[in-house]
Amino acid sequence: DIVMTQSPDSLAVSLGERATIKCKSSQSVLSNSDNKNYLVWYQQKPGQPPKLLISWASTRESGVPDRFSGSGSGTDFTLTVSSLQAEDVAVYYCQQCYGAPLTFGGGTKVEIK
Amino acid sequence: QVQLVESGGGVVQPGRSLRLSCAASGFTFSTYGMHWVRQAPGKGLEWVAIISYDGSNELYADSVKGRFAISRDNSKNALYLRMNSLRAEDTAVYYCAKSPAPMGYYLDWWGQGTLVTVSS
Image 1 (cartoon, each protein chain N blue to C red):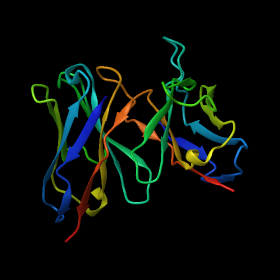
Image 2 (tube, chains in turn red, purple):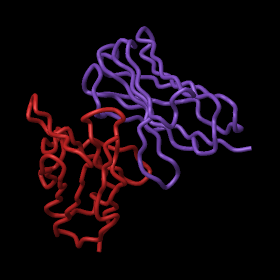
Image 3 (cartoon, chains in turn green, purple):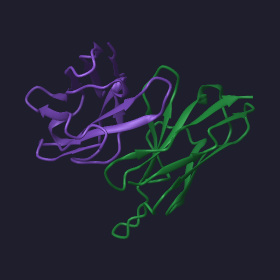
Image 4 (cartoon, chains in turn yellow, cyan):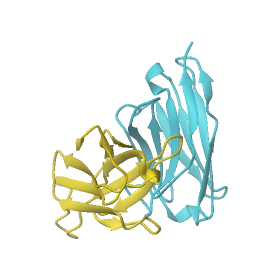
């Protein structure tokens, strides 16, 4: 199984400041056949189901604000919120979609400082 | 608009069975793979199972293999999870989720979830 490790477990960021979340996979999730990174990011606000934010490591889903961006390749990935807003308070999860079993990172809780 | 509505959760004794249902609407159900994902109270996300668009292919997490069965009825736009031999560690919110492909490995829409509590 591919193990996904997120860091930090939690972080507190001032409004308008940058939040950076790391995700590392135990093996590469970059496909040789299509050159895509099989890595997605979800946002889960309190009391709500997760919401897909970013697919293929860096493609924002429709309607996701452009302050959210994803980067990285192979085994190391980053989710960045460029200017944190109050509504971004949530737990963020990475997930590899390279193969079954699907596996998630442990989550990163983002709060306002 | 995609809607996924889970039902069937509740309190069940260890060793007993339960069937969850998910009613889908707002998309062509029969062309997409579907998943169950669970989240224990205060914990992270754990993938449970996937079924292909036509029901011909199923995969399970090791933690539920042999005890849980995913199925679908495309004529009713419905997804199911039969859970047997339930254990305390199966206690969680169970989410039904849609994949963006016939057997896709990520989830682009999630239901609100249904809580299953396994306790004597």
